[in-house]
Image: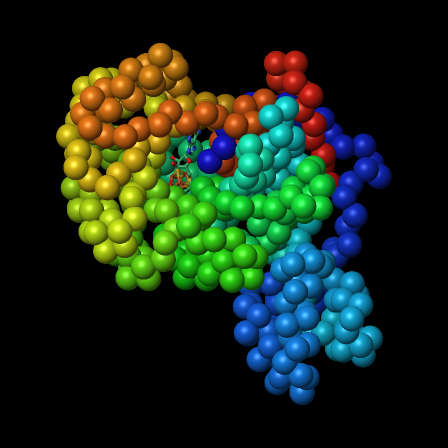
Length: 392
Ligand code: SAH
Ligand code: SF4
């Protein structure tokens, strides 16, 4: 989840990114290679009567060179390129909207083959580049403060559509920072609930690792707390970071903020997280959105401290980014976030107050898509920052 303010500039006609692969009717239904591992592509090519190295070449074009069409694969015979074009799609979509913040953050709305769209965010940091990816179109959980929740659930993303967001961010990294720029971290904190799309999420993590060369330790998957999926994930024993969105230290309050808490109660969730940390040996991160007057008192901090004391845990305090469509929540003042953090530390629980990124461009997850539909915020200026938007 990334924080954005609102500032729009429609892109001038003709300045859009090259639209190299608009989806034709057939490419919408063709099987996609993006989302397959090198091994799977090699097998596919062997079934077509080709040598295994052809599969490895194609995989390198898709994942390393980020090719958008078979035509670019110039070391393949023309006849094979034609054969592939007739039967398969690579699976790259179009960036529909792009917003750049003065801090370098770039938020993108990516068009999918069926006309749906999802957000992903490129986040350059000192010494590392990160991308925040979506796992679903919309989200069925409907947390009270979240713009994505307002959209309802449209569908799960495929593993290929998740990996594609990393490729899109890599394109942006190269454009912004030059050929040597590399996405080194991926956070699954965009639209949707990754653990309600577990299979595609795990496959995407494996592909990001094996095909893009990003270490599993540099991946973070954020969940609202789908207990059976946390238990299943533990069995994979993968060394990524699990982040659990807690938002409240009491069952009743949590139910008001996170409706899924009725199904997966707080005490059982914490037990599942405890077991997860034991099985994997990995510290669990707890996400806690700071909502003024709702969950941000020192009493809440002490209660949270009691729950997590002695656990292999770290708390991230997230400043709430207000959404124009959602009433009833305000961001906690920074001093309150600091007091909350200090109280947690006094209780023996490590905590970090997160620094919001891209505040000047668009709000938290789900808002870019929402604003494309409604264009509510069109023309509202940010505080003197050279933000730009491209509508592609
Ligand atoms: N569904 C998953 C992952 C996507 S949301 C989850 O809920 O964990 C990623 C994070 O962004 C969550 O911690 C969520 O609570 C937070 N978030 C969503 N909307 C926000 C907003 N408007 N301000 C601050 N954080 C927000
Ligand atoms: Fe879904 Fe996460 Fe938003 Fe809740 S916070 S509605 S789980 S995306």
